[in-house]
Length: 325
Image (cartoon, rainbow, N blue to C red; front, top):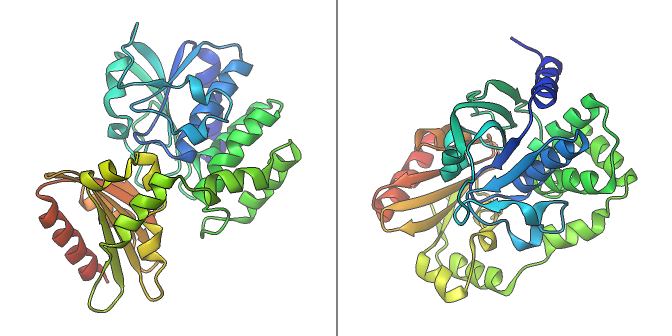
């Protein structure tokens, strides 16, 4: 089995040997997905390579401060002028997470898969997977260092964004000594840490506040108060004028109730499709649970997209968590 250093070297060789890349992250991109996308774009620009950045959907407007973020194509609107053979997938726990952007790939596609999810099955021709990394942005920090590229404020701000958001502002268990050392190094390159914390962790849009209120009105707890869950419907989203980005962090509210071991957020997409987000205090490995429902993630944070009547899905998921506890 190859070492992490060997994987970084293989990734370096993949980027140096080829040209004209397509860079893609997972559907409904979060801070780590967007930051990782633009970090690869920045890296390739330093190498003088051609590249295109894309996501299945739109990039949240609050992420547009990052270098290149406003140039990430919206795959639901854009049609490919050509298919791409060389693809870099970042922060995608499995191949299906790239979504409909797959039709931008050639049949002979070659994928560089860079990710930190334990459930990643290594679907790339080259895989840089480090499941104890706090964020994919942490792995890309290591890749930039491995390649000996000089940091600037743009790249450092993107890397800091991914690490800040995926560690919950350096509060989660994945905040390792290495993470803090990287954050310190990035700050030395000109990153404005307090400004990013305010923008990404503190500020809320009015639709975000409204949809959070709707969600908390649905709060349920199990009999032993170890499981708590909330639900948001399409009608709630419409009434609040909310977008997917406004749902960020809602799952933490049921989890943060004293005594709760597992918090669950059910986003009803249609009557027969539900997006399920899990958060765990550590007693339950929610990544393995999510995998049972066709999803994946981390021990403490995971998700899945489940098909079936939504009321039945809620019951099934809650009952499965009860059994695990």
